[in-house]
Length: 454
Image 1 (cartoon, rainbow, N blue to C red):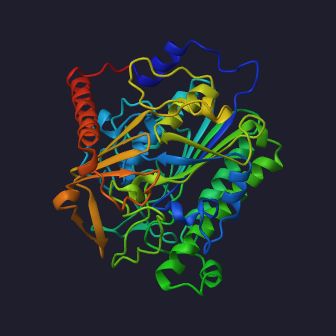
Image 2: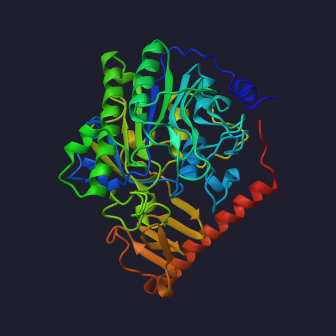
Image 3: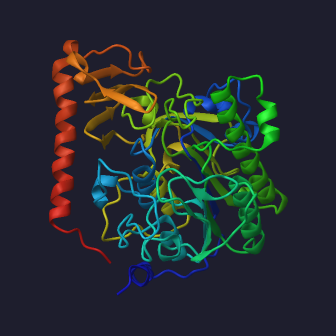
């Protein structure tokens, strides 16, 4: 039995509810630091549309992604599960290139979750979760795919140039298409607006995954001129962010024009922190006030901006301090779309709706991270990092050494993780590392049991 048919049979709900379930739009930036959004403190890059989105809803102050690098982070967002739980490597990103494996085909995605409720679904922009027949978006619950499978492409030619062999990577569903000279961000905008128009009378889910501000830093000239006063790396990065922000404004503007704003749940975040300086032109992003960059389990790699807007359902212009993580989106979408969580899968996320509505309600208790030999745990105000990557420059990185191999920080007093408190709090450090070790054992047991699939 196919996983989609099994889901439909297990849900046993009609596709049309008495009251309309909300539209859902997920905006995902690529390698965009928390320090590059106005409502999070950025002053030299203007993000008026993201700031307006935050004023209309809730901004999360302690939001994390599950991994400090693209594909595992996206997999967790898409499935509600830790990357390690679904068998993804904790040391290797999903490969770019056609016909490369990605997340297991048996995993249930956000799109498959809501299709049981009659949603129209679209994935626009960057996929990077596999390019075999069974792992492409159209096999993972999306009615429409318009975008690229690889980790990055040139914004105007839509060519993958990051490694050999170079190849063209722009598709509408499974058919290669050519739109030379049209910026990828603008194409996402066009397709999203069209999809909203075509599906305005039914609930829809749009996953708009931008390739901005990921390298190559190719932006419109008008945005380059807008930020010409900045140093080159920052200018190029700012121009990419400006295009992304404009696109988000155009898409939410179409929602408002059609009178759908109060019926639409909007979420924005980034897949991981801004990248460190490299010969490829990276280095213009900011993860301030946090330390380190993409690939690191220090805060700069995983502590992300997160904005939620759903007028009349979620309060406006508020901040929540609860711990939250990207997997929570899956459980949140299940709640608001009245979809049943997959009965055969462990879902690591928990819905945000209780604490979005009532600020006294709790979020996640403890969060676990693992990537490239690094381990991290966040519980309450405390965070421990073991074997953390640091001092990244020109595409190279080093491991924390000496006493800092295990680094304990009180993030309430030291959000930048500057002071290692491990020696003063040895019992606490061991307890947190013990939680991580127990979490890994539990994941291994689930995998050995070959967790049941629909």
